[in-house]
Image (tube, rainbow, N blue to C red; front, side, top):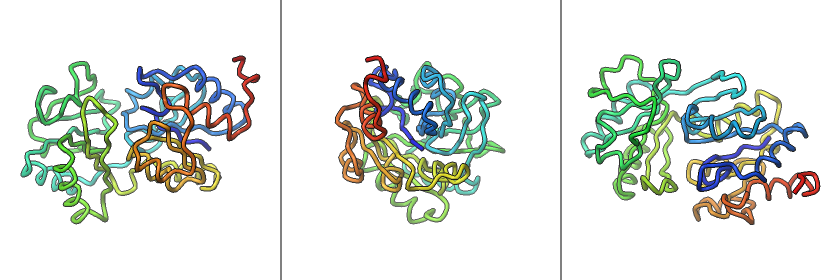
Length: 281
């Protein structure tokens, strides 16, 4: 089983999948290798880019907080923060002048993102853009009866986010997990908070167990903090050449090529013994 991150891993900087990646993943599918895409993106935003692969995929969206069978558009599971924990974190954030972008599970209602203010508010650091579809503004987040919050995202300078993360880890260590990502260059540092088992790794492992695949048989490839857990725990953890330094330190292998040069395909072709002759290159 191969678990692959999307942005800055499977996708190049133009948000497309390099042709070599497409060809290698199609061959792996033909070989019977299960392929999982694990992304921080919401499913609606991940799906169009992945359709070019034209193979059956399991998609772990929202950093593993929702699981989709893509060729059927079926959601098979989702994980939410409890309403109580969501409210407590929201209150503490407000005290610090922090306002979240909420990734919510209201897919069937046409809504994936909820904020308290319009996208232009400086608290969001351009994370929500004018073209963001399926976005709803709710002035009082405490009044949402079924929030179904999968991820709370906060944009701010790194030191402020680290201080807030320390507070969350001290007070909600048994109900949440969090990490700070740095690869969204438009936005800057982002603190992402979710259910304690809502990680790419935990969800990938749950899926693997459900289909009889051992941890040692899992290959995980990524570049940022939200990939760290799966790179540390998979049978073979792979960091991209363009990965963050702390992610590279945790990996058993670092790709020889970056995301713009099909690093995913090159490393997987080597692992599985795929000859370039098989790819019509």
